[in-house]
Length: 259
Image 1 (cartoon, rainbow, N blue to C red):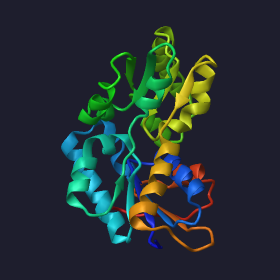
Image 2: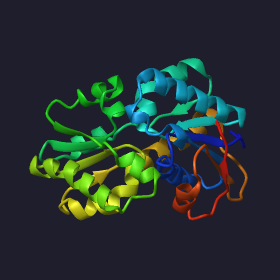
Image 3: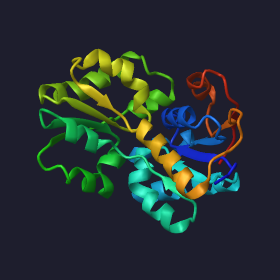
Image 4: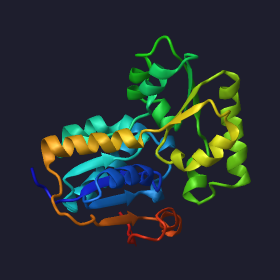
């Protein structure tokens, strides 16, 4: 099955580029359009209604660009809005939610930590997933302040280091053996997190699984891009493009546009 339309992705800012990178690596021939709604970041502190409205706005924009599938590259938007998006539109949606299952299934200590936004941890979908693993203790931690620092390019700042110590040290004391990153922004903090965590604690994020699911849905329902050359990737942001350009290594077009 052939479909040369682009894959659309959106996030509450630059974090979902961690998901885009995994998809781009797995499906290099696919054209992609990425929407960074940095003006409204972070979604994690907004109401469910606001998150749904923002997700609809982003979806409409991507559909107007002829996206054949939409990746909600944001944990908060997935856990709060994907049900409504799927009910409203015919296009397939790929969501991203915290990878609790692989952490819980593989945990030897039966204690795992999850670092996520308030919007994700408070969501019905998160609680439904967490409840399936009764024999695993889940240490939940809201990552207050992390997304704004990442959006400002302050991944290595002393303020970031201070917050990460504050959030991770109680998890270490609780004897976690897996840390689940429940926000697509957080993979950019892995180098700093590794400096704080003992080496035997494994870090899990959802990027690779989301890429595999995207490929699977394209193959089964939508169609792959059959062109043999490298796909084109375009990025839109409604805020300053500096940090987004830095994360992408200044290799791709970044268009500043109000949406």
